[in-house]
Length: 256
Image 1 (cartoon, rainbow, N blue to C red):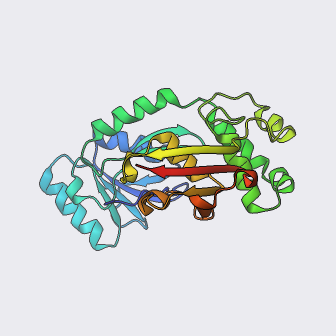
Image 2 (cartoon, helix red, strand yellow):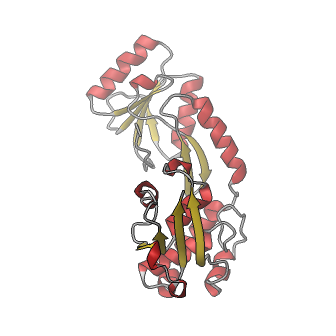
Image 3 (cartoon, helix red, strand yellow):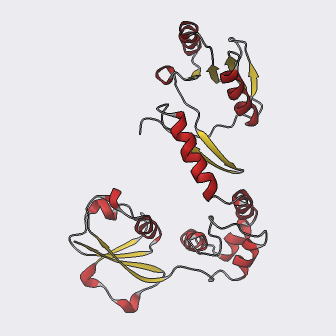
């Protein structure tokens, strides 16, 4: 990973924007949408700067001056000069999904964004806001953090009560809290892996590893696979497996 994806709060903060024309206008719209106050004063008290100058020499000189002041600089269409890049964004406020390529191809990032846009419900942000508003009720129902995490994971499972890829009605969270067990993923599931490479995991296998409460693994199951499981999931040797002790979501894992 050559870049660290972060979300920066810019509301009311100054950002220096140098340049005019189509490139600068696109950046202006993006930063103003995030609440930034844009200025073309190079000496302004700012944390970030955007250089959208057409001339390569002028752009490189401006970047050098701004970096000398300690600012993080985005140089439009000049990835080698950038301290940071701006991603393609899917906005389901407060849910934000950013797709970046490290400046390699803005077109590729846009294509991925457009594909994902079709998959994500319009009311995904409403679901996030609803969960935030219900946090006290959720804590009251599940005082223990581990129990609370399991309950939320179960509700957000594919096909679960709050599956984020389903466009829910406004009362979905209330219905879930009235009947938390509805749609819970529990019981025993057996997984068999043919490769020691964790990158070969299917989406379903990776999801189950991340949600399992207990794992019974054969001796030859690669550690690279098991590290994809939750850190607090209980681990046991497969030869100690006892089906009568299964609670929550339990995985039996074999390899080869």
